[in-house]
Length: 94
Image (cartoon, rainbow, N blue to C red; front, top):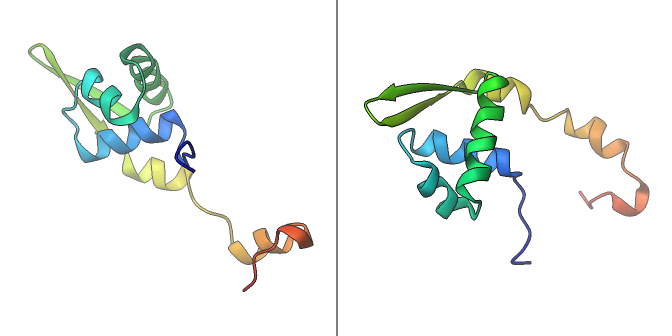
């Protein structure tokens, strides 16, 4: 199970930025296992989607995550409805 990840690269980068808004691409890459180039691409995606806003301070970037937007986009559907749609062999025992 060591290769299983519940978050996509976008989710991992977003989580890193929430924890450390001043993290560099290199630091995020080391924490997530992604290349700096991939981290840069993901941050651009997150900016275009409105999840992340970048500010520049000298040579460093700082990021602000729009937590409200993230919460709205990642809302989990009503679990009772979700479970009722699962096939009987995939339903967890409750």
